[in-house]
Image (cartoon, rainbow, N blue to C red; front, top):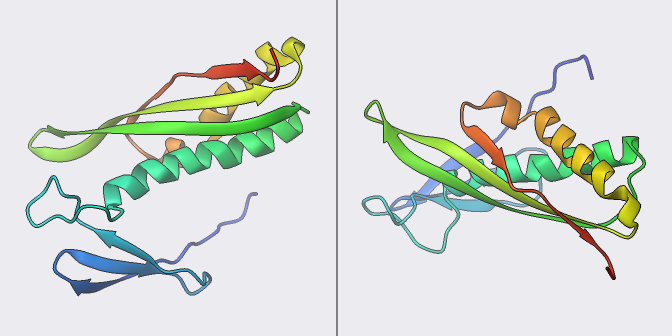
Length: 147
């Protein structure tokens, strides 16, 4: 993957503190708004803060899928919860920490250590995590199906 790749996203303001994200290469448009914790923020709409955490968590999943395939890990399920901490540092808002809580379900108890290794490698290889300043923490859970 030595060549450069570019990802275009457009935002159009619609009303109040709300807009719509789109891309020339994607069919779906998504709403974005200031979160309700800020003045004139809107509830029940995805915010830039949510998308930031989602990018990290989504990258963990997609990287896991590739790394698991490379390591021939036979997994049954993958899910991950993520929580980002927004705070003021040096008078600037920043997402200082993101806690990823991946849960990998496997069918073979003998693969527990391999599953841990794969998820750890996945976080280290995630291009989004590697592109940000937030501290990334992991709380890994490995489950054995029917066990």
